[in-house]
Image (cartoon, rainbow, N blue to C red):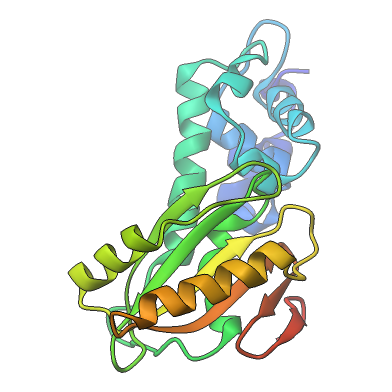
Length: 231
């Protein structure tokens, strides 16, 4: 059934304008982005097929490549660009810092909240460094590696160079575990100790290493695992 054949209160765009974007399902929101379908499928049908391609998970769709989207009949550069742009805007919104209020980065929970938009749903490991000043305010963040499904390697010299360029005094190491278990591996423990020793030689301090799984995280500083569900 084409969208024009639906009643006005069932059409995604009209429904959103009348009731707000929060009233729409994931598929309906995607249909608004896609705008139109093709001869065989409506925009709503295409949206549902796109969700099915991501196993029904927005986190998977977030990281879906444009080539994977193109594999779906009816999804071309224009439609794929709209979806990718919407997700990127959402990611930037979550990462945007308020210019009015600056909060020092003091807890592993703050690190998790800051980094989960970047790391949620990734099928591979990524390693990031947060650079902090003397008052633990965030000066910037930098991806230092992107590995396979269960490992990543970091370059201490690169990290030190960037930290000195930014005038940082402290660092926080962050990486994700695609397996869903944030418990650090032996390699994680060894790498953390190596980085701490390496940067201390130039006067830098490693405040924490936070290992993130989608719904939980582990803090080396606290030496414990936390659930991300309850704050």
